[in-house]
Image (cartoon, rainbow, N blue to C red; front, side, top):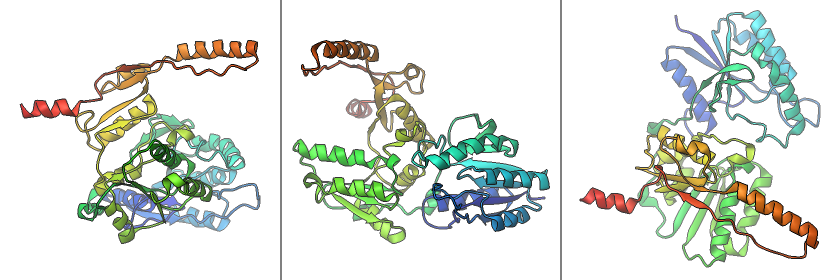
Length: 397
C-alpha cells in the first residue's frame, strides 16, 4: 500500500518557472515517483498582534491548525518546509503527535544556520531560539543542505539542491549581445547576495582606467533597502550605463535577458550570515541555462573554496580539469581536501605581532605617525589548479 505524504509549506508549488515554487513541485513529484501519494497543504499564516514581531509564525492561525490536523488523518509522513518556530508551532506539533502517534514528521530547513540571515528580526529570532529547543520531542528528522549529522538534537537527512535540466530552456547563444561582457544576476535581493561587492569592484575597475565594456543585468525584487543600495551604487558617474535593473521577471521576458548574457553571478555574500557551505539552487539553474563556466574560481577564503569544489563536483565538473579553484588562508585541511587546495598562505601570527607592536608605538607617540605596513604572503600550489596553456600543449603532443 502506497505511503501517504502531506507536504506543508507557506509557498504554493508551481509546475513551471524557477525558484522555490518549482523546487517544491519537483520534491512532491519525487515522492510520487517513489510510489507515495502526496498532497500539498498551503499554510496561510496570520500575523500576531504584537507589532514588534516581523514574521508570520506557524501555529498562529487556529482555522489553519484545525484544517491541518484533519488533513493529517491517515497520513504517514508530514513534510514541513520550515520557516520559524514559536510556542504555537510546538503546540501544533504536540497535538499532531498525540492524535496520530504513527505520524512521522520531517522538517526541511532551507538554510542552516539561519540566525545570521534573519539577524535584523531580533525579537522574532529570540522567540525562535527558545522554541526550537523543543522540536526534538516531536520531529523525527531534519532535512538539511548542511553537513550536520544532528540539528537541535534531531538526526538529519542531508540533501542537495538540484534542477531538472530537461525543464529549463537553454540560453540562445545567437541572442547574445554583440560586444562587451554581459553578466546576469537573478535573485530575490537580500544583503547576503553580496552584489554590492560586484558593483564596488566594477566601480574600482573603471576608476583604474578599465576599458572593457562590462554590463551587469540585475533581475529580481526583494529587500527595498538592499535594492536601493545597489541602485545608489549604480548611479555613480563611473557606473552609469553599465548596470540595468529589470525588477522581477519570469518566462520569456527572463529568457530574453539570459540570451544577452554569457556569464552569471551567484551569491557573493553568504559568509555574511555565517553560512560557509552553500549549494545554491540558482547556481545550478545558471549552469542548466548554459551560462559559460569560468576557467578558474578564486575564493575569499579556504572554507568557501571547499564548498565551491563540492558544488562543482556535485554538478559533474572536475577540479581542476574543468575548472581551477584557489583561495586565501592555507588552513590545515587544504592538505587533505580532494583535490588538495591551492591557496595563498597568510601569516596571521606575524600580522598579529606587527599589529600589537604598532599599537604600542601609537600609544607611546600619541598616534601622530601614519604608517602603512605590508605583510608578505606565500603562494602554495597544490592540486586544485591547472595551467590551461600547458594542458593544451600536452594534449596536442
